Each structure stands twice: as structure tokens, then as C-alpha cells.
Image (tube, rainbow, N blue to C red; front, side):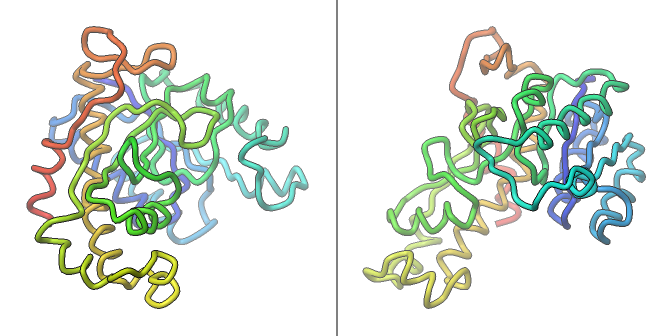
Length: 274
């Protein structure tokens, strides 16, 4: 079985959904992999959502390592907020402690960031090959999923996507591993676009916010693809269709590639959802 690691902060239902989406495909033997450990940057009792995640992990029998980022920060007397461009020494020390905590487990071939709310430092990036999800196509906008959608609206874009990329010290700039694309124009969207007229994203944001029908529909189509893409990415790694070698993404022949397009596979999975 292909060994993987799992990193999460377990802030809410989304984190549990991510774990369930992959673990159920493992249990059904669709994915020939095993989650060796789950690392959680919180500890029992820090929030009800955290405790729900802990119970879910226990139900799957997956080893769970809990190490509170909040308590570590308070112990070091550090202020809230972190400069993501230049992590302070205490923040790098937290990553070093993670590496120590996980040294007792078999080294995973791949790690998944699944609702992990911390920036990864260079030493942790060097220790593990970690992939993360970005809610846009490889050539799409940067930022959070909300920022991505507003930019798509401003650009009057006709398509979007979801990407899994290798985590590097440069935030959201690692090489593309897998991705899928989907249209945001056509019969399902045309009426919503026409309602915008010439309004900019800023105007729509101020008047309607995220309740805008086009905003909601773009998010619905993107969110429907996130869980399938994470699962299919793990499956692609477990089958040797894609690999990471010294920070380079390669195909089954060991040749460098710019990611694998899983659009057909993902779109077929979400037809029943949408």
C-alpha cells in the first residue's frame, strides 16, 4: 500500500469531509493507500470541532498526533499573526517539533494538507513531499476561494478549475501536480452573467456580497470538485501515474511534467452532485 501522511487543523466540517472522502475510497479499495498518521495542530478540548475530528480519526483507527500550535505560541510568548514571507524562529521551531513527533512513523511517500491552517516552513517542506489544494486552475487567480471568484467575475472568465500543487516555502507557488477545469459560462451560468450588466466585482461585493447568484454558482461548481480531486490525486500517486522526485513532478516514465489533467475523471464524478 502507498503510505501517506495527513496534516490538518480540524477547524470544522470541511476537514472531516476531506478525511472521509479519501479514507472511504481507501476502504473500498479504489485507492491502494494507507494513511500512516494524521498530524493535527490542535489538541483535545481546544474546540468542539476539533474533538469531532478526533473521534472520526479514532473510528478509522488512524494514528493521530496532536500538538497545539496555540499553546506552543503562548509558551514562546509570541504575538498572534505570522509573517508568511519570513517565518520567525519560534515558528520554525514548531515545524521542527512536528518532525520530531512524526519520526516514530514510517516515512510517507506523500503528505496531504487538508484543512491545515498554517504556513509550512522550509525544513518541513524538505522533510516531506506535501501537496495542497488551490481553488483555481493552474493559470487562474491566486488567493482564497473567495478572492478567486471575485477575480473571475471581474475578468468575465469563461472557465475555472481546481489544482493540487506541491507545497514549497513560497506560498501557493509550488509546481502543479494535478488539476481539473470546468466551464463557468454556458447554459448553467449565462443568466447569472447577464444579470451583472457592467458592474464590477467590487460593486457586486458591496451590494450583494457572497449572496450574489453567480458567485454562489461558481463556488458550488468549484467546491463539488475539491474532494474528488484530492481523492483522485492520491489514487494517481498510488498507481504510479505521478510522482515527486527532488521537487520535480514526473509521470509514470519518470519524465518531468506540468501536472496531470484529471478534468474528465473529476467531471464524471461530480455529474451526480451537480
